[in-house]
Image (cartoon, rainbow, N blue to C red; front, side, top):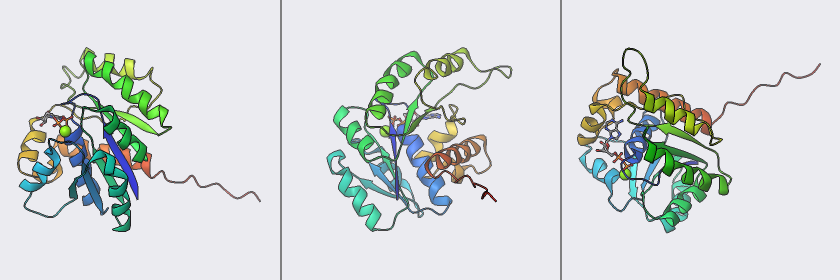
Length: 220
Ligand SMILES: Nc1ncnc2c1ncn2[C@@H]1O[C@H](COP(=O)(O)OP(=O)(O)O)[C@@H](O)[C@H]1O
Ligand SMILES: [Mg+2]
């Protein structure tokens, strides 16, 4: 079993949106998923309560007990635990990073989010964990071009020594609507741009977490 920690020091960057969408994408792909909701606000658990169909298991976990939750998930035969973190306490963040096989740092393309994510990236480095940035709530392109805030964010992130996942999420009302129904955009609006984004993001995360071994040709 592998553990994905979804992190940011700020509230509202999209940790819960990304966590639960990736949890459903993984579940739709046949993986046994536990979504550990470490935020005291319990947004992921609220979403699960709205859900009328099967799906990933959501468990309200306390950060200090995350290791025990991870062990239980492993014993239960899960393939993936996704940790949706709280924005506040740095000890909570450290607990999530410690348990993680991969850390996804979520930020909006804004000056303050970029400033805040640097500290998170340093924490991930301190624990020697692999990780990547994902840009959420990017504004739509204008006339086929990215808005300056996206380019500025990419430029800043590229100085932090971590990859930026090639697929980010645009600001789309579809995310908010799906969550209100206890669904993912892949279920509420299959084939939509939002659903394609999530499919692409999950594939990018999966490639990072389960890299396909490069076949080495045997020397003759
Ligand atoms: N890509 C997006 N497009 C539109 N709304 C979004 C998007 N990502 C997040 N939101 C909205 O922004 C708010 C904060 O998102 P949330 O996932 O709860 O952030 P966090 O868990 O980091 O606090 C929510 O109202 C959510 O619906
Ligand atoms: Mg949240």
